Amino acid sequence: MYPSQAKELVINWHITEVCNYRCQYCYAKWEKQDTELIHDNGKIRRLLESVYQYFNESKATNGFAFDSLRLNLAGGEPLLYPSKALRVIELAHQLGFKTSIISNGSRLNEPLMQALAPYISVLGISLDSAEVKSNQEIGRADRHGRVVNIGKLAEMLEAGRRHNPSLQLKMNTVVNAINWREDMSRTIADFAPDKWKIFRMLPTVTDALSTSADEFGAFVQRHRSLGKVIQVEDNADMTESYIMIDPHGRFFQNAEGKKGYQYSQPILAVGAEVAFSQVAWSSEKFCARYSHEQGSAA
Image (cartoon, rainbow, N blue to C red; front, side, top):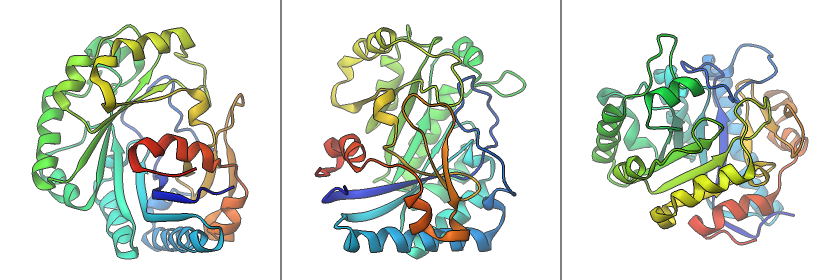
């Protein structure tokens, strides 16, 4: 059953598995196929064309109405390939997508923000802790033990807003066995995001650093003073509610209570319509996640 109305339909393309961090609970582990599509401009264009055509046609054929289609780039860490990520965004814009990106923030710099910010509507930053030790224990550190510099990150986000005054900032935090006792209120308030998404660690690939419902609830309650900026997603909210494409051009999905992912055939082999029919997706869950921020109707 498709929703009757949504302001924006979001397609999450995880363009690479490569990352400079090694988070213990990382979900970006896909069954390998050929080389990641991000390295082939022709395949990128064909993939985007197929996805854009299918979802825009589906709103007429399936009664799924939405005002815009947004391509969100994720990883791994998509900004390890800055020129290629920018190329995807350029191609997506040519087709009619809105675009956004989710990053760990470690590779942001002024020239990149100047090039990137004007073309994206949303910049997402993954930040699980403001503490160096906690980030290192989680694995949010490079091979030299370096973690994201909070001060520099704040400067880059301000630069993004300067280059695109309408840019929305979203922060993502995964609550896990290491950070669930932390109070991030001051840090989040200083960043002043439009949305702070608090996720409970989802054991899709691994149980590492999993946390209990009570621990997750305690973290959420500790930050309630931040009010409407908070959006909470527990494990059940995250299953079958995202439209996701892996680095090899397959739709994939997680399922409640199951390890690993369900994959479609490659989009380039069978087309977006056939491929999307091969994975589960709940329009009701999608609308439940987005209704309060974009007015979707169930």
